[in-house]
Length: 270
Image (tube, rainbow, N blue to C red):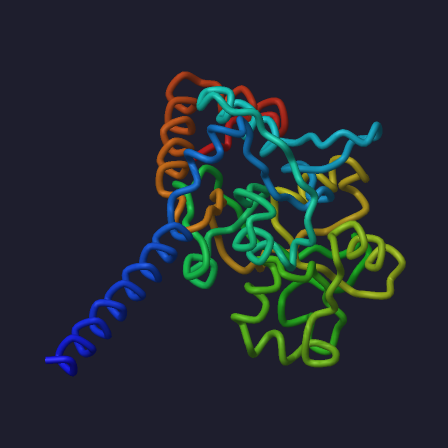
């Protein structure tokens, strides 16, 4: 009888421990929307050099297309929005650790990223293009064999280059040159230390407008089309739904079109 009691107590304790652990796990995986509503704001992580999506203007304020879009989205949801500058190569780590609530800054939807985060519906189309100086003799991907090609570390441009393994292997050093941001990549190419760079078309077009399109040449060869989305933690399903609803509403009432015209001179929102 005593042995049976001991066994029963052991079983009950085991069940209690398992239920306790399960409860802890459930708490960790709970959608954070309630907590966000209580504190009254969301934190958006971005690379503050990625013009015209999100960048610092001459007075140090963070501005851009994605910034305006996010402000309007969270105005409709009833939340303030704070923008947090992050190391772009560490963006998913910043998100999973809770330092930011989402990644919103020309964030390309890729299968690899979809394994780590949940994406909103795509809201903008983009291409990864190749740019050189206007006086360069480079006119195609093939001409880049043995040349120095740069891009941003942790970017979808880098992913696009690496997916074309034959192209990547053909470059000088067998791989692209990496910079923390595209400003540095552009300066390196302008100093003729590198021969070309791969970047988002949206960013390149903005740079050309600001720096003078006549100084550069965009190759007809590119790395294909892609789409931008907002990246959230996989547990944040309610927040994801709220953002999608707001983006849909903004497209229907023309708000996103106005923001697009402000930054691009035309409506390019999906």
